[in-house]
Amino acid sequence: MTITEKILASHAGIKEVKPGMLINAKIDIALGNDITAPIAIQEFQKAGGSKVFDKNKVVLIPDHFTPNKDINSAQQCKALRDFAKEQDITHYYEVGRMGIEHVLLPEEGIVLPGDLVIGADSHTCTYGALAAFSTGVGSTDLAAAMLTGELWFKAPETMKIILHGNMREWVSGKDLILAIIGRIGVDGALYKAMEFFGEAIKKLTMADRFTIANMAIEAGAKNGIFAFDEVSRSYVEKRAKREYAIYESDHDASYCEVMELNVSEIEPQVAFPHLPSNVRGITKVGEIHIDQALIGSCTNGRIEDLRIAAKVLKGRTVAPYVRLIIIPATQEIYRQAIEEGLVEIFLSANAAISTPTCGACLGGHMGVLAEGERAIATTNRNFVGRMGHPKSEIYLSNPAVAAASAILGRIASPDEL
Amino acid sequence: MKFRGRVWKFGDNIDTDAIIPARYLATSDSAALAQHCMEDANPEFIRQMKRGDIILAGENFGCGSSREHAPIAIKAAGISCVVAKSFARIFYRNAFNMGLPIFESSKLWSLAEEGQVIVVDADVGVITIVGSRRKPVEINAIPEFMQELIESGGLISHLAKKYKEMNN
Image (tube, rainbow over all chains, first blue to last red; front, side, top):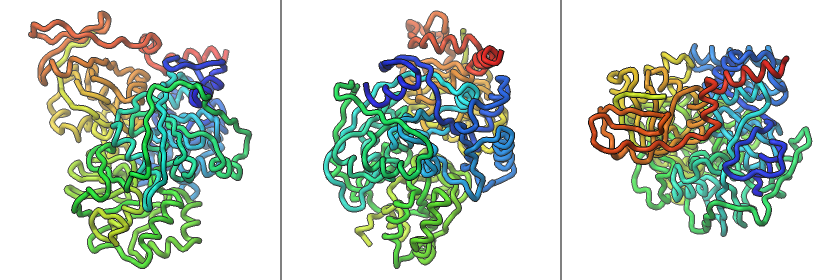
């Protein structure tokens, strides 16, 4: 069996799981946010729910339209807060303690290897980087999980993705996943698990792995998953407050497809509007002027991302008439960025620095685009209207390219500085 | 289940931001969401569609976010069902969970034109284009478990029953 099949089998209390099987599995963590949880709470109550199955296993994070962007958002956050209070939810993080959910949960040690995690947010697949099975669901599924602690799953087939070689300078996890999506398309892994292998993977930091697993959904995948190793061990050890289980794919596990990629051949990637699969290497981008650069999100708002941005921005300033917005993903990352002097570099570069929020990535607040405007963003989606006006454009990149582009006012590699 | 309605055609990879843009997600009120249904894909859609109309889309319909607001907006707008070549995983699940009928057909997209009336007969498993001499096209079978879910009125009523049993 693959690691995905093993985690599903153990949580379903059965010996073996095969692709296509429908199973009922126990949930370790069920996550909701200020957009998706209010509907889940209504459904929970509609089903006659009075108490959640386990107050330590339901996680509620107001991170999307927070700090409250308008009255309606304030109402939604209040619904979340009232429910968290009423249910005495252990893992509720108020603004000021809060971070972007998919960065915060691993940081706090809430999700651990071997867990089965569901979240009413499509980027819940991020935690696969920790060798957990983790997938996005809708609000009704979240309601069901909050009620019973279980959910039905159809076991996915697994696609094996092997990465060879060494990454070039300025290339990161973001470029690898963009290159993969560029090759297989936005439905290239539809309904499937993506399992990452190869010697290039072993050298990746946890930040790079989170970024790769995070964007598995952008290829249509159910989950993205990495094997547990020394890198994940050292990340998890200092954070875990409970026992966790390690699962490994068998040598004779079966895969529906194998894809190999030599990462040495990959240069920084840019996804053109309006699909994450619409990628080009940075040297093939041409002259594209930008109005805004955004560094942050559940994809690229970690301390490693901010360090790279600072390296590029140090001693330089943002181009005239361009806005550079930097959003540390959690309070902890924000503090670290201050302590390491990164915030000083950002301020001197004329960047705007925001409290943690998902706001700008999905056109909520903190960086909405006007008609005809163009942004380079380290986020995950460049769909029509995603960050604002339906006639605005989003180009996706890694933090180094976003920072260099902010300085030059056009999409550029740090090598051009 | 049988649905008769006018076809609204959309292409491949219609994402959840096109179905209901995130800028309108500060509410979960279904009528408010419905007013912006498909706005960024076709701004005329919501003004001109009529109750009972059918969305016909290409591959990977509903890709992107997990927002249940997408099937909610479609259902509240009055769309009777969605037929697509394929659906994104979370959208597929959400649609069944909240009772929006959806059907997979790889053939219909290239045969039916916008504005034509079609009849989706879920019991027989075929779709007919009204006024066309073509043979009806087949619908991909819905897994038995999903059929049970629909028959018991969606996931929540299914669970309400289960939850009651658990607490008795």
